[in-house]
Length: 428
Image 1 (spheres, rainbow, N blue to C red):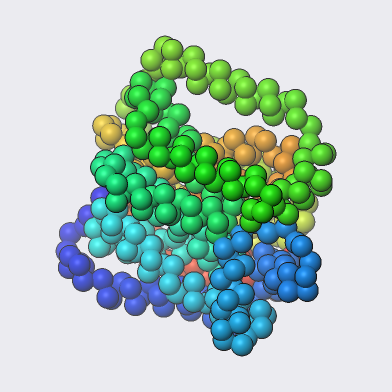
Image 2 (cartoon, rainbow, N blue to C red; image 1 turned 90 degrees about the vertical axis):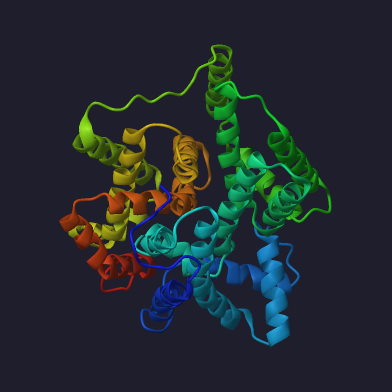
């Protein structure tokens, strides 16, 4: 899982993949903006543009990304640009900078230069990464910050020295002020990690203590009268929580907590024996899980999401082909990890945590206002899943591997069509 490969990039010499990844990010951003008319349909970027304008008009509007708003307003004031000009520029800059930032994050996490560059490139083939990458919204950089803080927590587990703890708390608090959704997803991933460690018999230590200290501080700021999320909490209480039917989700969460306690009392250890059904059976299992989750998500989602494909399964398969290829690579990589046995690598575990969190949100979708919660978590899942997918690509049969690699521009183009939704291909 270290992403090693024979030959290729010299250790520490990353200027070539930096340039190539920057170009691979900025070209789709420019094509989508100045050729495909993106964003043509209702989008998060358009929503944030409207929010920024309302805030300037003195409207006390609920904001889920106060750090994002603060940064955009300061940049617009410093440059003299209006928000309609500033947001596209920030989107294009982020599209070029984020693949390069991920290259360095993957390297710091222990991947080889080839593994880091290949993982970042593979991300661009999927619309679940390309979508938030091409828009100026908090999630664009929020995905990267979640991975950064997760890596900081892993480092704190290994060496809880004061500088490491301080950096973790700095990143943790910064993410809280930047974007509350990213912050909640981070805590969900850490919660799954800590819960699994606990039921497997590991005693909580200093890393868990510092996480709770950070969470308590964030909660105190969140609930304070002058906090950055005051208006958002008022909006949730008035328009969202009031209409929720609480008994069933609360009962489900209570059963989940009770199961964790029972597992802990029985010193349940998660041991997955090497599967006996072989690679083909594992691929069918992965495809079945993805198909089941996708069917449930389509069932819960508003009807206009499927209507965009205009009733054509071929159009659906075309624009989803990049996601299907990424999923195939991930399942292949997951098989290699499970079949090899032993300790699971960090990125594989983090991807599984995100999948567990996505499954929980999917099951709660009938009681949530946002029916696309699992899709949003998938955007964050992509980043730890990419090294697993890259490892799977490296173990594929040569002919299949060449098809995936040389078809990369096609997968990128298909995902770009999925994100931009040109009128001759998809509806809004």
